[in-house]
Image 1 (cartoon, rainbow, N blue to C red):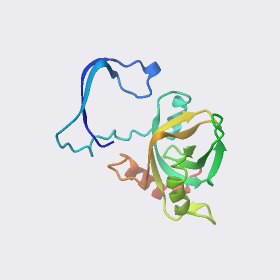
Image 2: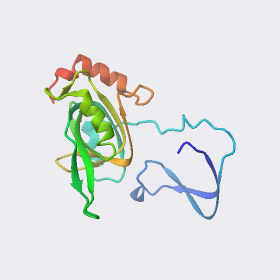
Image 3: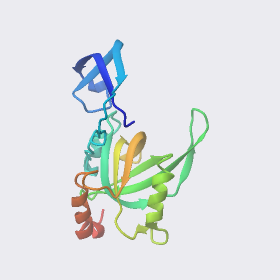
Image 4: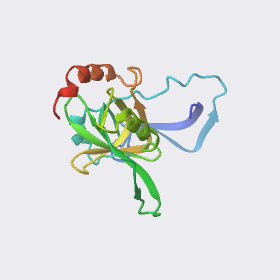
Length: 193
């Protein structure tokens, strides 16, 4: 991570979306003749980040049980307790936490965060929420990249190992979060979902 490599001797082909979990139109294939070497020059990698492209909660049904992950941006309205489940593969325990998010569609979605996000980010969200009333003192915006959408309990989302979760993102982190904040403060907080 945060390193640059030089790739050569590859081929570019149209992406077969049936077998791809990214929305790119093309893929680059490398075989045994490929050459990969570290870049010796100093390169600023801070801008080499895929911008967040959030899907509105009302449109998530189109992504149910598809391989393509989606980005989410919303206001957290509930934070569940930290829990655990047993993996079928090795019977080990894995931490999980459910949160509920809403956006301008006035639709909600339950997002399951898995360890370590369930403990780290989920713990921060739990702290932000008042335990007696179950609501945060100030609105908590959440941007999540790369969620899997499933049909569990209607439509729900689940974080992946590659998901990046940002609490109260800036407009640079998540385009549209400023407008969402204004909507929440002016009408969203009192609207029924």
